[in-house]
Image (cartoon, rainbow, N blue to C red; front, top):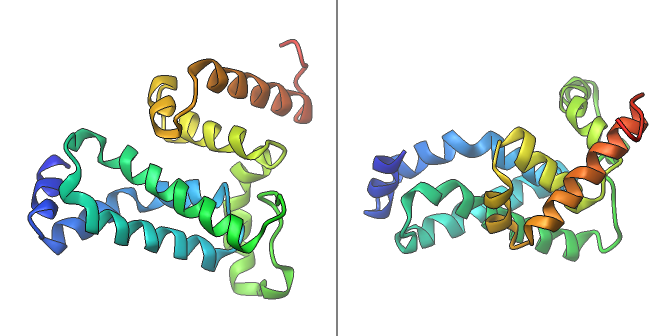
Length: 173
């Protein structure tokens, strides 16, 4: 990946495109945790890629490309969320009028994980995604989200408890 980043920093569009391909699914999952509308998710990812491309020359530690891109994405998602939604929405609120037979199956496939985490608040969702799906450590999440490690651990603990209670576990287990 570092060779692709070096090439992209020199202006190689093909190398940048390959980098995007490597992380696009992860970016989608993270954006989906904040924004429910598919076109807004696409906008957030597209804006993230534009900013990443424009700023990639500034990236000093090549091993942090993905974390750096995720930070940009989170900021873009939050901006779109504040601008368009203003009210707190949950991950499972879809625009039913826009659903059709072709994308219902796609939505069902996406919902397995998102059904589980829909009971969590935004901070818990993003931390759970970064921790369990992206397999970042608490220290890495601290750097991405600019949060205290104890706060992250508290969010993880609360998220686990909510999920246990909701899906048949016990609160003390």
